[in-house]
Length: 253
Image (cartoon, rainbow, N blue to C red; front, side):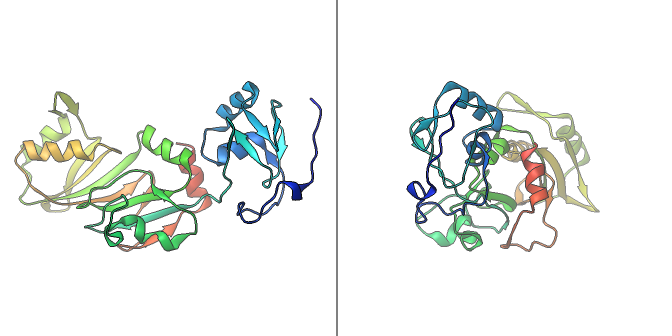
């Protein structure tokens, strides 16, 4: 395939592209970094002829682009912004969506972390506390939603959990005709009203229903472990940026 070269100044607009032109990268990586799809999927789209670079259709695998190049996917310009990964220890009474009163939104707590707009990879209810990841990387958001991740909650009950009920939870219980089984569940120390429970992300609502069926009121739900991440050195209402190694681990899920 013939090579096309064009002057950078024809396509680079500092006002619209926040990244500096450092070096060329593979086209599939450029597309993947935008969060549209994985590199393997990007190769398929490139071969299918739905990707253009500076107005020119590219079907060559391994083709390299500058960060300043105008890359379009299905005639839509791919935005090139720096990916951000922020871990928040969410306090109580903050929801995980935009609301009229921004003070009540957990998103508002991480606004100062970066200039990019970042969003939660999943949701904790307003009454729940604990770990939640915010990012502008759509690929990671999809991974977090589609993969079963190790998640540990500390649950505080209004009364002690009977041993027989603990065994019922361990064995699995039916909620709305669906059997729900935690990976592990145990008392925390000597306090039988404090329970540690490990489950797949997204299943906490079912666990809450289990305790409801067993006539236990949940006073507090705190997510203390999320996909290898913990609350260590992260006080409530505080956030930190994930390290490169932590991001790499998440991307391999």
